Image 1 (cartoon, rainbow, N blue to C red):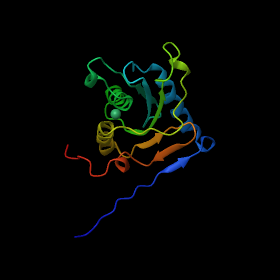
Image 2: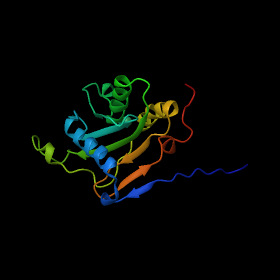
Image 3: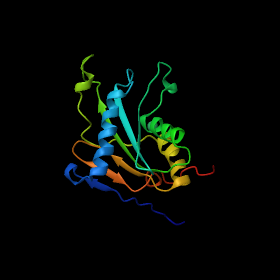
Length: 165
Ligand SMILES: [Zn+2]
């Protein structure tokens, strides 16, 4: 028997260390949290994708009374990105979130951003991975008010993924 080990490398980046480009992308992801429809989880997530031509396509989580019918911000964004720009690569994705669960109704917009980064669910990783396999690495920027994590690719977040497509 041989024991194997998988290691990933990611950067922990302080707010002042972020590039102008990344700040813009994060800013869009943050903005999208205000366009979330999440009356059930009250967890507002925004995602913004930097396309190969430099443009940004963004999405937010959209929930539904039939819970499984809702969709995460990351898949909302990458599916929009592919639908609007068929065949175009995605270079980066930034993700931000606000938990409005503690806020009274009508005061949701006052909820602060998560201090620690949140990361995409397994289904979103799998969806993004398909575009990464088609067009090259997608850098992942997980925003936290205190600290932001930067991963070099989706595959670094999803070892042993399903790749037969
Ligand atoms: Zn997800």
